[in-house]
Image (cartoon, rainbow, N blue to C red):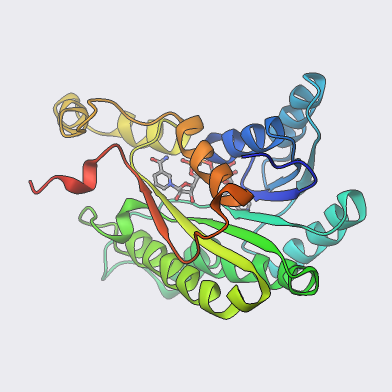
Length: 253
Ligand SMILES: NC(=O)c1ccc[n+]([C@@H]2O[C@H](COP(=O)([O-])OP(=O)(O)OC[C@H]3O[C@@H](n4cnc5c(N)ncnc54)[C@H](O)[C@@H]3O)[C@@H](O)[C@H]2O)c1
């Protein structure tokens, strides 16, 4: 799991799972660029990692906006050279009612949780094809397989991420570019904490009791799997969706 010589680009890297991926990839020798819309948080995080000797750089990148992605890509390539490893991590939740959700809300949400995965890939693929090497990891979710009521846009977008991953794996495999997905279960990040704080104590207890390991994941436990998939240690893993949910998907009821 050595990423020396690789330039990794992580979207949504200012906090949560993305921040853990940035740190883990840099600790394993990668030069890591990360983008986000929370500029102050991102810059502060980059400063703190640099202080501990890691080679990281922050760039503003709104994944829901193609121009912003293209600008960020130009900037990071000028800084560190071509992107060898892409992690599509940026994402938001969507709780919606199928009748009340508007088309505009759907389009906005899908631009962040699904279309962005294609847009970032479009930016990095030409150089990867030329180099005949590259690795893309898309962060999906267990919601692609099982979900909650009122979570239909999120479940649909994350299922789309896995479908897109499969096709990129087929289409880009001949260029020695591997594409895989990681589907985290409950992971202790601000997105999860916000949800956890919004439900009743009984629901909180139930959500912990149903976990086979009786706890949620730490972001670093997801990050290590992503780093593995980015690295040459995973040289024959392509088109896979790695479920990292502590065994939750094995539960029948
Ligand atoms: N935490 C979980 O339990 C969990 C479970 C399964 C999947 N996931 C997925 O993991 C990924 C990371 O989730 P997290 O829990 O770390 O969330 P988080 O909210 O803690 O972090 C998401 C990051 O993405 C950034 N972001 C949001 N919109 C953006 C945009 N338009 N452009 C660029 N950056 C943007 C945010 O600013 C934030 O820094 C998401 O794709 C999420 O769907 C999370």
